[in-house]
Image (cartoon, helix red, strand yellow):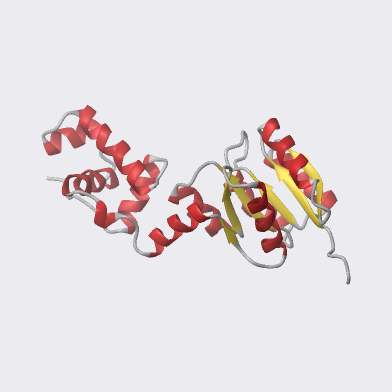
Length: 214
């Protein structure tokens, strides 16, 4: 029986403990070779040009150049490499952005080492891999998101956010306090799985949720 060729993996994460832990775990598998490690996306790209990895396992939140923005650079410089994002974030915004930029996998940092290996094997074979929590978010996106679970007041707030209103302006428009407006904003981020106000604005526009000024 022919032995499976080794899968060359490049690890990129600015947390040294995570990087060392991943490297130690992956090196226990005979069919996986850790071809390089880096704490910055740009450094990882430089290493990648030399080692030509089959799979790039990359964090999102890194200084200078974040993982999502780095995806396009890796696809341009290393078109044969498969990119898997490894993140603590399960927000729709991060996942969707990663997929749209060209990531072939997205797994959460709390998954088991066996699942990380499964993700590496799957994408190396030409497939895609998303951990269970990520699949749930993607399914919600396909089904139109969570707009049906929003209260009428939350839809009003989301529409005003989509119109670029500040907490003070929303408070004046709806007869509430700025603090209450901010609470609604935070609840919307949590309920919709969106990390930033810019993401809420895009979500409101994508779903046609708006409140006319008056």
